[in-house]
Every structure is written in C-alpha cells, then in structure tokens.
Image (cartoon, rainbow, N blue to C red; front, side):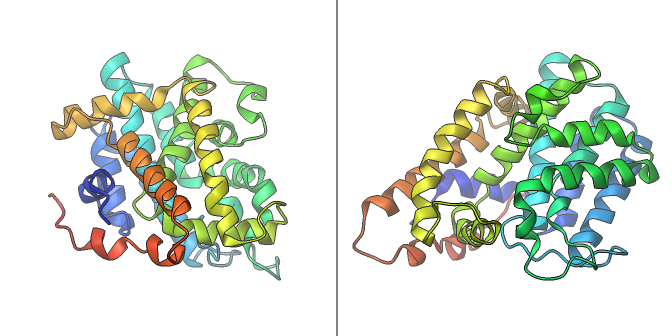
Length: 301
C-alpha cells in the first residue's frame, strides 16, 4: 500500500545516511550564516554519530531501536527546516543561538546511550530520565565544540513532556522560540519519518523495559499511538505555538513545493495506522512493512 506524501518527503534526503542529512542541514544553515558558524555544529554532529556508533570514549554503542541515530538525524533536519521557515518569515536568530539550537538537536537523545559502567539492559531503561541525561551531556560537552553548554542544555529541556518547557528559566524570548523549534522538531521529525510505523514496535520494547504501564502487547502500542497523535497535535499547535507550520515556507522557498510535506506525511501515517487497527483480518506486522515500496522509489537530487 503506497504512502505518496511520506515517500515524497523521504525522497528529498536519504534519512538512512547521516552524511546526507548533515549536508542538507548544513546547506540550510548556510543560507543564513557563515561557513565558520557551521564548523562547531558539524563537529558536534560528528561526535554524536561516533557516540551512537560506540566510538565515543566512555560510552557504549546505541542499543535502542527507536531512539537511534536515524531519529536524531531526522530531528536535526526537521529543526533546520522549521528554523529556515521561521527565518524566511520573521528573520534569523543570532548566529550563536542558531548554532546552539542545531547542536541541541544533535544531542537531544544522547541520554539513551549507556556509559561503559552502566551494565545490564539497554538504554531504554533511561527513558524516564533521558532528557536530564541528554542535558547533562550537552552541558559538559558543548563547550568543546565552541557552544554555550547551559543554553544547549536549556533548549534540550524543552523536548521533555513533563512540563519542562513551561518551567524552564529562558534567557530571552528568542531562546524560548529555539526551544519551541526543537520540541516541535522532535515530534514532527519522528512522526513524519517514513519508518515511523515500523519503528513503533521498537518503541514498544523500549517502553516495556522502561516499565511503562499499559503496554502489554505490541498491538497496545499501535492503539495508543492514535491517542499520542492527538495529544501531539494539541501540544504542537498549542503550547509550542504552531511553529511547525513555518516548514511550509521552507519547502516553498527551497524546493518550489508550496506544501507542508511534514504535516501531510504525518496525516498519511495516521490514516494508514487507522486502517491497520480497523482491519483485524490480517497480520498487522506484515502491514507495517512498507519500506520495500518506499525504497524502490527514485530520489530527487
């Protein structure tokens, strides 16, 4: 079964290739800032790729199937796209704030990575505290990339779902806007990803290890995703100010496509999931395997 809007979005950049994602994020960044301003972002992103691969001193490789490097790269690219749309409509952030926003996107889920001393289970055991762990990592590591560690940590805190965005002591309104951008990109990036529905089964096992109640079977995860979608849309367009909508200006300006491809992809994902839930006549696992169709489609340059 096809998913044309999601495919169209996926064809713009290969989400499985971190180098391709970074190249596109860098291209967007450099519309507004000097090449030199991108250097610390690229250094941070390279370090995070090493971290997820198990090549960062003191840390193990990523072992969470949902919160993996693909997810991090999706959030980084969505951050770039939303920010670009905002800059087109309202004007750009100061270069240092944009730098720290992009670095925060790269670091926002490093809290799932175990240190070499943390034995047993997987990084999913840190689900409930991963935002705090990610913020602590960024606060300690960001200065080595030439970023402001405390600000990167504050922006990461906005991705938490426990009220962190409201409780955060923001330095100013622009920094708070950066927090809205990342928090929105974290949600939009994952739910518009062509692999989102397939990866929900990985998320089920992460939640199970984390001890979250109400997820007794894989099918429970699929059912509850419908409610999560509604909650997510309320958060995106309410508390987070609807900044996700600026991505339409990005696609219109950079690709000549006057559509919100992310919103269309999210809607198609949920429509497809609704069809799975409504049809109990076949195996839902088989219906989630759509990647062969999507990967067979040619990509644009």
